[in-house]
Amino acid sequence: MQATNILLSDTLFYNNEQVLSYKINYPQFITSNCTSFIGKLNNYYKENALKFEKYCRDTLFPETVEQYKYAKENNYPIIPYEAVMNYNITYLTDCYISLYFDKYIFTGGAHGNTTRFSDTWDVCKGCIMQLSDFFPHNPNFKDDIITFIIDDISERLKNPNLQGTYFDTYKQDVHNTFHEGNFYMTPNGIVVFFQQYDIAPYSSGIQEFLIPYCS
Image (cartoon, rainbow, N blue to C red; front, side, top):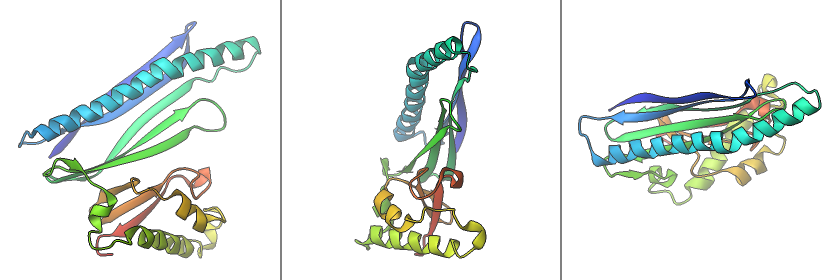
């Protein structure tokens, strides 16, 4: 199994000034088996990319034009919008594909915002995998994962240099914001992640926790 990258990008102007740029990367998978599922998967990611491109052109562009007009009327600096979508393939074999996408949008202010979403596919069965598939004999896997993550954070915070990395309410935050769909496979285990601001300040970024397969 191999993967190639496809890029959709453009820079949009209003009154000959740049107001929006976007770069959208998405994968296309290649396999000697040429299964119909891989074709459907490629189409799925292509359609997702085109949908985001349409959002950039049909929603973000009109918004940034209005912002441009407001800035001009009030002698404010022109700050172009930016949209970027990148992906990272974390596990790739003839049987399994796992990857995540980071979608970044900047519309002014101190910084933009990044949202992560992930998919893990069983290629042989032709279906998406759930986190529960990795714990078939453990009906309490969700509680165990939450406990594992809280303990991991507690260990991290023993390092004085990491004080302030997480919210003081991180234990309750982990319970409240844990999402079973936020995971991906790696050669060493399952990585569970939390979105920005779920359990930590923006400066801490998206938080990830590796759960070894032997757990």
